[in-house]
Amino acid sequence: MTVLDFALPSTLEAHEPPEARGLARDGVRLLVGTGDSVTHHRFTDLPELLNPGDLLVVNTSGTLPAAVPVSGSRLVLHFSTELPGGRWLVELRRDTGKSTVPYPDAVAGERHPMPGNASVTLAEPFSTGRLWAATVDTPGFARIEAYLNRYGRPIRYGYVPREWPIGFYQTVFAVSPGSAEMPSAARPFTDRLVTRLVAHGVQFAPVLLHTGVASPEAHERPYPERFSVPATTARVVNRARADGGRVIAVGTTAVRAIETAADPHGEVRPAQGWTDLVVTPDRGVRVVSGLLTGFHEPRASHLDLLAAVAGTELLDRCYRAALAGGYLWHEFGDLNLLLP
Image (spheres, rainbow, N blue to C red):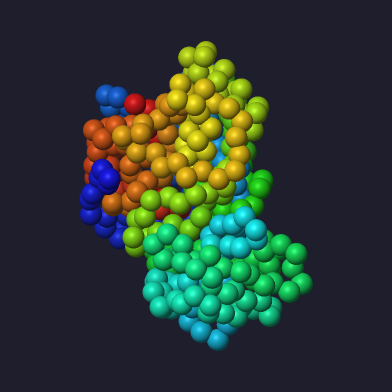
C-alpha cells in the first residue's frame, strides 16, 4: 500500500554531497514534524530538539563500492546482498553514459566478465526478476568485499551526475561493511554532534542491517536482509522505554532491525539472521516512537514505514512543507525528524 503520492521536481534532488555545496555534513536542513506542528531547523539543532533520556538507534553497516562494470559492454553489475552458501544477489543495469537503467534481457546461465579476471554467472531470478541469484568468481580474493574495494565504485543513480569517493557514502557509525547503498539517514552525524548529543543526555544503541540495492524504478517492497540486534542494545532499548524515553530510529533500516527483534508486546530480544519484515501502517510499530529519515521518492515503499511511525496526516503535512520549503531529496539531501 502506497500512502503518499506527489510530484518531485528535479530541482529538489540533491545532485552532490552537501560538502560540495559549501556545507558541513551536519549543516543540512532538518524538518521536524510533531503531533501539532511542523518546524524548520538545521541538523546541528538536533541536541536541542531531543530530550535527555531519548535513545537513538543507529545502523553500524558500512557501504560497499558495490557497482562493477561488465568487461567489454555497457552493462554494470550492482552487488546487493550476500546469500547463505556464498552466492550473491546482483542486479544488471545498462550504463547510458549519464545514468544506469534496468537491463531486462538477462538470462539464466549467462556469464558476465568483470575486471581482474573475475566473473558473475546468473543462476535464477529472485523476486520480480530485477535481481538475480548468482555465483561469483574473484580469483585472488578470498572475500567479495576485498574484490569490490579494489574494482568497485559506489552505486549512484541519474540524479547524481558524477562519481564521488566511497568516503562520501560512509556514516560516522559505519564499522561493518556490507550495505550496497548507504544507510543515509545517519550521514549528517559528525563526531562533534554525537558528543553534543551525549552531553545532552541522549543515548545511542547500535544495530546492524546490511541494506541491498534500491528499486528507483519499481518501488518494490524490501526483500530479506541480514541484520543483528546485540544483547546490549536490547537491554538499553527496553530500559529506555521503561524509563519513559523515546526510542528514535535513525533511518528505515534501524526500524526494520529493531522491530524484527521485538515481541508482540514491544520487548526487544537479541536477534540476528535474516529479516523479511515489512513495516506498514496495518502492522504498525511496537518499539519505535520516532524516526529520523531522509525524504523518500513518490510512491516509494518506504513511505509505508514512515506512515506506520508517524501516521498519514503528519507525514502528509511534512511532505507538503518540505516541497514548499525547497528541501532536498535523496542520500545527499536534507532530513526529516518525525516525533508523533
